[in-house]
Image (tube, rainbow, N blue to C red; front, top):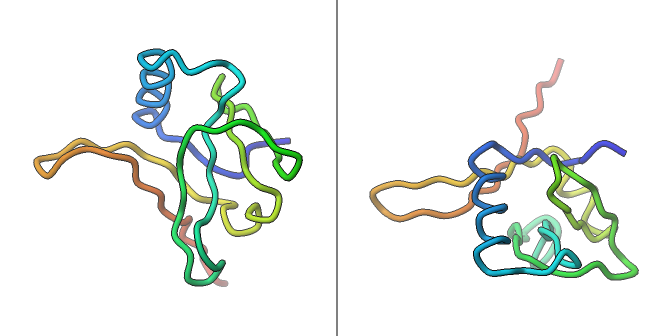
Amino acid sequence: MESPIQLTEDAKLEIRSTLEANKIPDTYGLRVGLKGGACSGTFLLGFDTVTDFDQTYLVEGIKVIIDKRHLMYVIGVSVDYEEGANGSGYTVSAAEKKLE
């Protein structure tokens, strides 16, 4: 199945770098989900292992883990990594949907 999320080139580079630098085992992947309620929740990113509630995807060699209960809320999101004057970090943004 195609991944429901997108990872930018900068995000993929930073994820691979973090996995390698911290010697994170292959049993871990990038968890993308929600914290809090679905409508008022915030996106969650972190490295974690797979549970029985998860669906896994392989995005250009990066294991992405999404809780099946969160899947409908994260479809179409894009994960990016930005560096700027105020610091650096991951950003998650929802896809723009056009109404016709």
